[in-house]
Amino acid sequence: MKKTLFFFLLLFSLQQIFAQLRFPLDDNSGKIVFTKVSSVVLPRSEMYKRTRNWLLYQYTTSKFDDHFNISKNGKPVYLSEDKRMRSISGKYGFYIMYPIEDRSGLNMEQTFVMYTLTVNFKDSAFESRVSDLKCFTTATTRNGMRPPQFDLETYNSNQLNHLDHVQQYIIPQVMNSVRKIHEDLYRNIRYGNLTSE
Image (cartoon, rainbow, N blue to C red; front, side, top):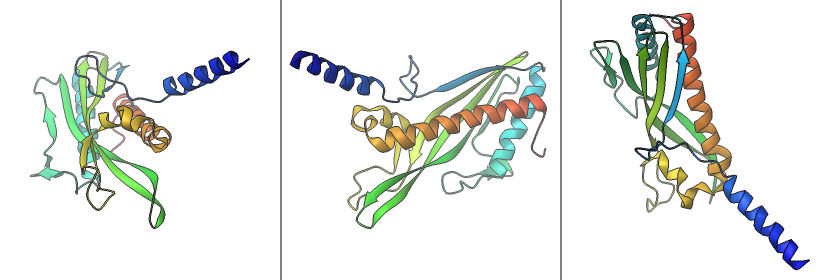
């Protein structure tokens, strides 16, 4: 009986370890990368134009001035264009929030996640790739134990990945935000610019 009980407890604990959420890693670089390939019956030049307009609109409506300079002479500093219209990339970001308990009680911690969106075009298809994810936050302790900037891969580390707030808030929010980026880009390319040109 004791052996059976021990076996079930061991099985349950192993299941908890393997059931933990993790961010997807690129095999070659070891970095977190979210990739999605979509088919759209459009020429490459039209997909490029719609994507460029969408990226420009994202910058002009951005509220992330604290994290990077939005424009220089009206053009985003972080927009990288290919003259052959095969790819385009830009930097943008989103916020994640999670509760923390400190001396004053339960508060919400806010972290800005900056990423690079690279879109590669082929005839009738494109690949969107979210990579280079960096987190910007203020230190939560007076002696600055946590750095104000760190890679998102930090949350995959054994030290942090098992924490409840990482499993319940951070990973699901990042995954949901990235899913929305892919969906919004796809909609904009497929149905025309849903933003002003």
